[in-house]
Length: 209
Ligand SMILES: O=C([C@H](O)CO)[C@H](O)[C@H](O)COP(=O)(O)O
Image 1 (tube, rainbow, N blue to C red):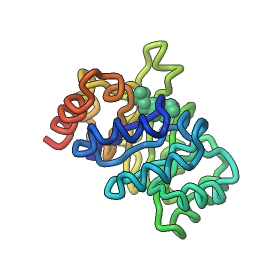
Image 2 (tube, rainbow, N blue to C red):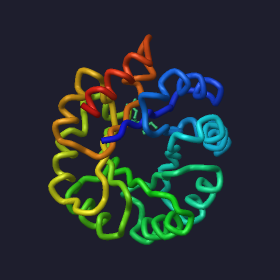
Image 3 (cartoon, rainbow, N blue to C red):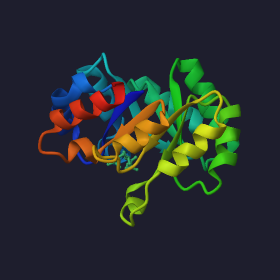
């Protein structure tokens, strides 16, 4: 299992400071959608330059023009690029094709998908690298999480890696670890803590055993 740190509510210098604090405890740095909106793909290239040994995920949440957007994120230094599961099949296939050409990976975000199992099976057949169940901020605010959805995709996905995101904290991490996804994505569970390094270290310990 790998641990991905999601950076959503920071600018580029703040992002670099946070990663410096926790870098030895994480595997992947996510440049979150709000950061990409505020700072553009420069956030991806600056973080890749600052931390060449960490994988960088660009959370573009692509919906259309997928091949082009995967190409631009790859050129900026992203190792993994996200696309929405609710995008057209043609867009998903375009993202996979371009990522393969660039030697990169595609993570499909299942946010807002209603029939999780059916869509996960389809995506798995398209050759995507990761399928990620995700409770976004707006549903977290009404007490939802993705733990049951994670079990659902684990039961049908045969090829892709499985991932989970959305409101995971140290005190709920054990519920996620029990289901054994390949990738666990944590934002506020680390970035909102006074001692970010201690939070990341504790999570890494629980994940790696
Ligand atoms: O993808 C995310 C969200 O849609 C905002 O862009 C977050 O990175 C993801 O939810 C992880 O963050 P936390 O929920 O704070 O753990």
